[in-house]
Structures are given as C-alpha cells and as structure tokens.
Length: 219
Ligand code: DHB
Ligand code: MG
Image (cartoon, rainbow, N blue to C red; front, side, top):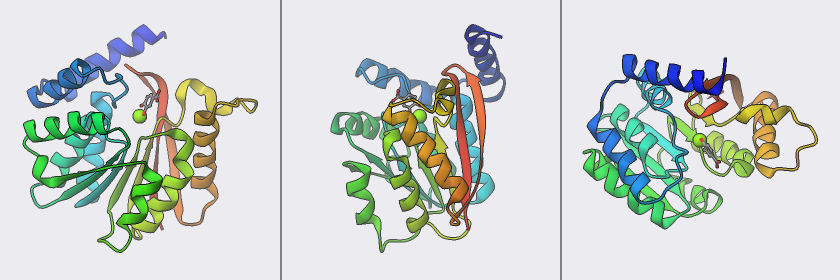
C-alpha cells in the first residue's frame, strides 16, 4: 500500500461511481487556472456530501470554506431547486471564482456566498432559518468555533461534517505545535465531549493522501 496506489484506486472508484461530469470538471479547471490550491474534496467525497444531503433530506446547507465552489456545487445540486446553500469564504478572489463556477454549473441561484472570516460571518446568520446540514472545511484552527456555531445554527437532527480530521496521522502527535493539528484535535475532542453532538470519524486514503472526515448529528 502506497500513496500512488491510493491515488490510482481513488481514480478507479471515481471512474466507476462518479463518472465524467463536465460541470464539475469545468469548475476544477477554472479554479486551477485561477491559481487556487488543489485542496478541494476528492470526487468520491464530493459525492459522499451529495449522498448525505439526499439521505438526510437536508434543504438548507451551510458550508464553511467555499474555496472555488467544487464541494458547493455538489451540495447545491443535492438540496434541489427549492433548497439553499450558504457558503462562507474568507478570500474574495476565491469567492469570485466560486460564483462563476456555481453560475456555470446552473446552481448559482440557490447559493449565497458570504465573504468574510467564519467567526465574523457566522453570528450574522443567527435568527435566520436553521440549517439542516453543516460542512466545515475551512481554517482548521477555528474548528471548535465552527462546531459551536453549527450547533447554534442547527436543530436536533442537523448533520455536521468536518473535513481533514486525520491529515497524515498528525492528530496523534501530542507535541505538535501546528495550530491546524491542535485545532483539528480540539474539534474532535469537542465532538466527543460536547453533549450537543453524537459523532464518529473515518480515516480515508486516496487522491489527497491519508486524511479523514468526521460525521456528527446535533442532538
Ligand atoms: C488543506 C485544507 C483542506 O481543506 C484540505 O482538504 C486539504 C488541505 C490545507 O489547508 O492544506
Ligand atoms: Mg478540506
């Protein structure tokens, strides 16, 4: 088992189960051309997000970390024409790429991109309709802040998904002073200890190396 093997198997699974998708591939090409980092979710994980929205029946989705809108397209398709996605992005340049990608994919009308740091934008969503699913995929050092808002802006039954919970096994390095590692670990501890959540996590290997996702429900 090697990272090259993981990548090839991930490509195989994507070919078998996700298939060719001009809109998603166009979005990736556009964000590569714009110089965005290639850190979007893998196709099989994008489809996992889509399936979890479908299985849970979520109609209102909150995404923290838009990047170029790749995962946002998956989420927006899944909520359907009557659904809504609010996606928070700190970098205005990324948000512009995402807006063009979402419009080109035909789902722009159901997505609101809110530009700003999560910690500043999230309080402005209070008092609005609750979210049925929250996808956290932004600066890892803020994961506990994002989880707190996911619980506050959700309702019993809201699904919470956290990307990048395993990154190369770094989370077990107790001596790590990387704030992304400690932030990820603090988030996992919160998912385990905070009575507002029931959670688990899965490690993954694939095109993006060794990583993982946490999945939780708000009690
Ligand atoms: C990084 C961020 C991500 O959300 C991801 O999926 C992979 C890498 C990063 O900041 O390096
Ligand atoms: Mg990620």
